[in-house]
Length: 163
Image (cartoon, rainbow, N blue to C red):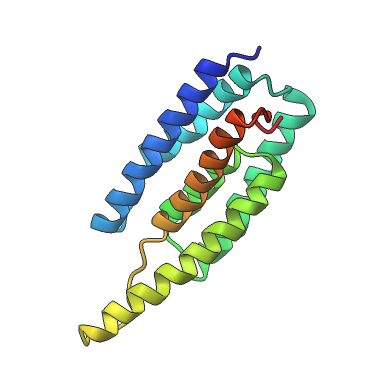
């Protein structure tokens, strides 16, 4: 089933959740498990609304999401990424094609690197001791919002929703 209005409504809800996550992560350095679960649980509804075939497309997205989660779980194990960040990246992979998930990882890595430099600069300017904490959910949300904005703008150019 292809319902463009409902599909873009779901994408709007996702965008709003991502903005909330970024703001809350800056304030508390945490990402709610409830929000990560909501993102993951809304993905099948999005697939239905966007007309994503369960086989092979949705199945591939689930497989890629598991790989993304496992990859970033390794970063969590090395103590370089928070658990909420790992779950957010995995949940977001359910919303994007494998190619777009790769783009998400590249964009969030670039934004995350820039964010780390800013946080490090502030940390040093304030002459704080220890390792600075980086709200990496901001980088993940920024990467996903970038892709969502492209999807929205491409719709006006007559291009598809990515499927």
